[in-house]
Amino acid sequence: MNRPNPTDVRRTCLDLIAATPVFYLTTLGADGYPHTTAMCNLRCAAEYPTLAEFQAERGDDLTLFTSTCMGSDKIGRIRANPKVSAYLCDPKQIVGFMLAGRILRTSSTTRCPTSAIRYDDT
Image: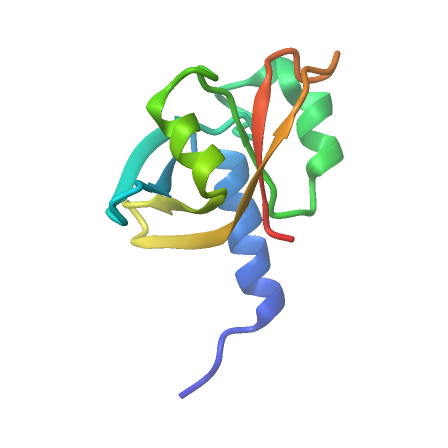
């Protein structure tokens, strides 16, 4: 069996980040059960063309950005346990990938004028 080329896999992931308007964020509740929520992907070029400069700066990394209400139950779960997973997919091609990591809160910037939660693969 041929193993996929890591460069090709990374390129596929980056292409999905740039093209997928929604990703699925999973947080854990205090009871240990997962909660999955659809989130806007601020790195989707077609959906957020005014963020083109911001998106270009992130070009080659696997960081996801979204915005959400800071008073939501989801934020309460993240504050209690910042370990999350995010899943992006293209169902037409039956291809997708999952990132697991911690949520980091970022501030608004002139390039990305919404307050955002940063999902980072580091």
